Image (tube, rainbow, N blue to C red; front, side):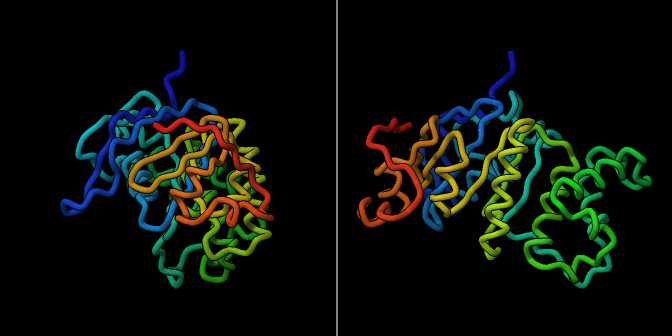
Length: 253
């Protein structure tokens, strides 16, 4: 029997004694596609960093693919919200993607034929194969984001975390990205943080709203309680005219 993709039990975390997350509990099955919404400063990125093992919880338990997050890192792909990459650094798109193979290669040794093959395939999957030798600074914002997604793909992850992958990117790229993620979801579990409720409702299988606590819905339903938690305004004003689903029933965990 496969372990769950993610198990979180009674998770709490604070920065300098300020509570960021409190008593978070949820389970995500392998093959799921989880969308996480919530206000800025609500703890979404902190939760991802805890799941990745970058941060350690004050209390509670986290298992990723049945292992502690640090032990599962070679099975995880991650696209952060900000890459902090020097665009003047002399590297091409394929160089960036090959970095995703470092965990599979011995540090200090040349990349193998398999590493290069996987990197090429990853670039092709995100529609960037023709730019493989283009300097990273010469690419548009959307093209660079595709390259960084390919870098995560090159590691052949079982679970894929993306933190606001469409921030500052044009709407056309956002539509293409989520179509790609739906296809990728056939072979990997997806967890994505986004502010776009319309995109969430039409693509994900599960949805969670994080604002220090969490409301988690396994059927991908955006509830009035989630809207209130995320945006602190009346549900009918947020929902009117937008292409997302709002349901009354929910389970708070």
